[in-house]
Length: 339
Image (cartoon, rainbow, N blue to C red; front, side, top):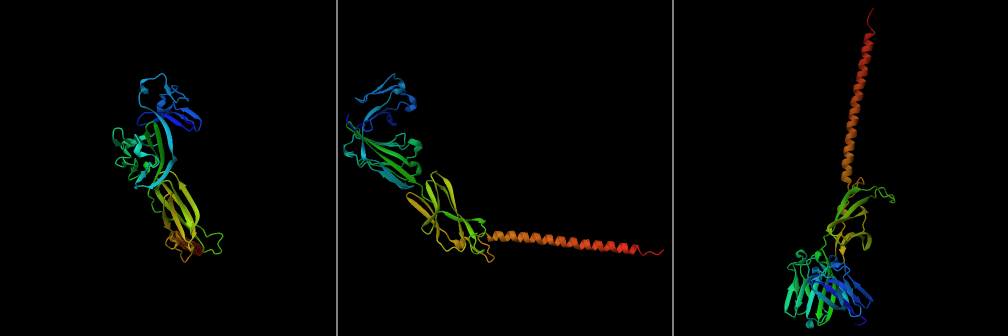
């Protein structure tokens, strides 16, 4: 063993589960006996001098493929790749001498699921695109000459960790990738929130009123929604969940002449909606703005109610006066009878 060796013992062919490791670079020696439902619990012994692995008290469930890897990582241990949904992405094994390999395997996810392999010993090339509920079905292309793997028509569910493994004689090499697939962004929608605020207390004129606006998007994830005044950021909200709705409020004066825009972005793209204050916030002669029509209706209804009440009171007053006059006339007539 060399001073910088990393030796790994793995179990299973498709799963390729790590069960023991010697990392001389970090001076770490570890057995992972709780993996695979604990079938190796208290049964693994690792010799740190010879790197041999002993399995004690074996049972039928310990039957399977075991592989001893001397792991030589590429200089650039992991590539970070971002792509838009629907586009293709190619993972290149540029730091591995492809023409000299015995076999290479492409694996996906934290469980190291085998999704493609080339075996030069038997001259075979296979893609396993039905694994993981078929999320890779008809989307994997493997290049036999370069060993590169292409995922076509990508979707967010293809985001994750990919790894290429290569066996060359008694040496094992690998390279890791982190792929992020971002959904295509919708254009934000700016609407009047239908609630008008009172005149600004800091305003020198009572006619200066604010218009309440809302910028919204639906079914988005891993995005940031922001309001800008010119090139200056006013406010923003971010979300890392998938398929969520976002909204961000903004208040402006209806006569504001500044340029406002609402921007939705992720690490690789953005969509912008510019605010048209004149279109969404129309001032009225009586200083009613934005939702002034609603206020006008309310005022009209109140005025009608007041008018009806006034008429009722007037009729009641007239009838009361007539009743009093009739009573007075009766009393007067009754007191003039002769003896």
